[in-house]
Image (cartoon, rainbow, N blue to C red):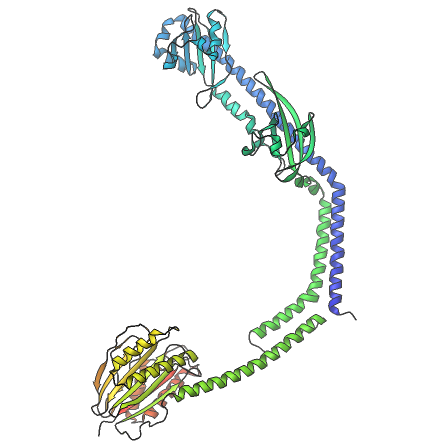
Length: 631
């Protein structure tokens, strides 16, 4: 029996195949059959129109140039005749540079030249060394004017020529001198003609025409490209560009060619123009990429486009509905349940049974979650046992039998430690260095958990081993800091307080390594802060030297040592227990004459009352010490 999953796939594939096949077959068949030929004809007509525009522009440019040349020639003859008349009326003007300069301005020309009957220049403006006694018959360009010496009716406007280093256009006009045999000549820059030639330059013509988006116009002469939108390809041969000259036989035609790595439809037409009496033949080629040939076909097939859009909408809606009902809804339900599971709710079950696939997936996830819950339970139990064992080891390393020295009546000690986790980083210690010296220590390792506990054991062992050698407290911390700093890969540190009491005299030597200051109560007095000399935290800075303080204890003095877990205990309002609250509580207890154990228990009770059930954020360690004097 076929499953629901197979049915789902069959229905989905059937509808998708039917609708997509109908859309593409109908669309492409109708489009290519009805519009391909028309699109090709439209593209060819577009190219012909552009070629016609280019030919029209060529003709208009040549016509404009001819008109400008005729106007310039007529104007130039009028100016040179006027100059000849001026000389005839007053021959002396050719000897006056000031008058020649004035004539240049009046006639709006650039040069004036006058020769004698031998063609030797006798006057020129502007005055240049190369014009001095220049023989006009010496060069072909000027020799053409020598006929004016013997022909009284001679008049000539020379063709525009390029001269100078920048090949600037210049034109000369000349007539026969009227006052005596010779030549009268003017020269000028035909700026209007120069501008017109620049505008009509065939090299710039193709860039002004575009066919479609990527179509181009090329103008060729003698199988070389003379005008193209891309200047870097000008003056190259047609073969280099990708066009075989054999394709251009006849006066016009069309062909397909691969140009610029694109298949293009190309049309050409040949055209000739006259330029200063010369016949020049040009071949004008228009091209358009084959990919753009069907743009008119697509724009005219509006009904087909609408039909395709409607058909695709139907496919989309049907497929979306099918996928939504059969697949997506089931996936959403599975993901919703998985989100709860990943957030920690292992009681959530996946119940999606719309088909066999989702049923198998749901059952698989539920089995996996059940196995995960079992593994978590087993792992938690194992970790709890291991942490309980670690806690027992840590607590056993601390003195926890009170009174610790029942035979000694000179002092009394009591200490407690409440870890924030199973194991902590705080520790306390007290021991007899010898019969007359007692050491007390309270310390706090940075961090929590197993790493802090291991660092705590190392620090505690180092301090005790150094203390029992009998060295001063400052030297104990100096050497401990050196040892801890040498192999401190975890970059942990310890705040610590050590005091060594000479029991017989009451001399109490202390050192603080960045630790909280203890509180001391003198006999029949109040608790006051006891600030001991010392230095930076242990393992914080290699090479630190520590200093020690010394105080004489009297009978009845009491000392309270603690870690920052006391003063930095937080309640649900994120308020600190604080040093002031601690000092006030201790001073309230001075009148009760309570024991050290009762004192420390009352402080812990007050902290618990203040935190209002908030989770303990740090280890709380306290040590109380009474000095009863040497009896």
